Image (cartoon, rainbow, N blue to C red; front, side, top):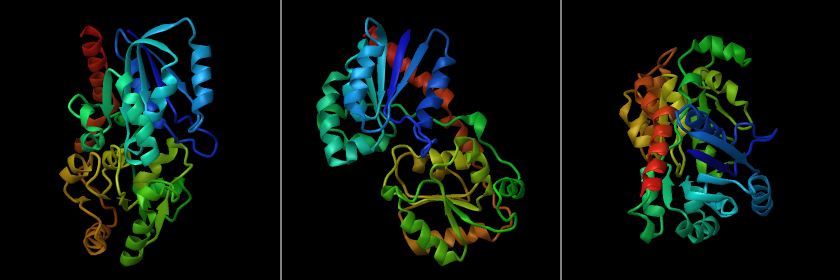
Length: 307
């Protein structure tokens, strides 16, 4: 089977982490026997240029599958010949009014419609809800796991003894709600650090360095940052969006609840009572690795191709 994965999340110097979950899934797909996968990435917003480049680069090639990530990517991907067209929707492509309109216009061209988490189904236009398939991307299991908290802090140039909350996104991502993380830090009296533009190879250290990872988002597509933190056995506080109820919500010592400063502060204080707070998160995280989810994607491709 020959497949082309298309992503509008190419990284750059300012955002080296962008689109990493797509690249991780492609790496897992390439590990499956009988599957030959190419990846085409382009910068966010460069859709017309991407359409031209896709046609130029893949002219004369017909793929078994062309699979786009993010609804707006599906349109430029139409320029590549394929027996099966597929798209995975990640949230903003359905929730943002303009993106939703463009995504909805492209959905009839896609024989396989994936959603990053089950709670996105209700955001789909009604005619497409029944045929959507949950196709999360998963996290790279081999890159995450518990390490000594003090050592991680020293590698990052931090005080080994200072507790802090970690907001695992850039502050500018408004839907992730750094303002809530900041309010929580003020309530419990510890600093909050945010990530953005961080080399993905440093994420394991950042997660292990944190006393508590806080994900107070208005909504998530899946919620990979929370799962990566769980894989490091770090306590996580998260809103019940995306896959959080099935990941964070299943781990003792974590909190999956609507945003309420008093409730969240009580949970954070409980974790901060301990010098090295840890939770049994790895067992809950590992089923969400790239391996099993890549196998699910290939099974969906084969099922549609055989239909």
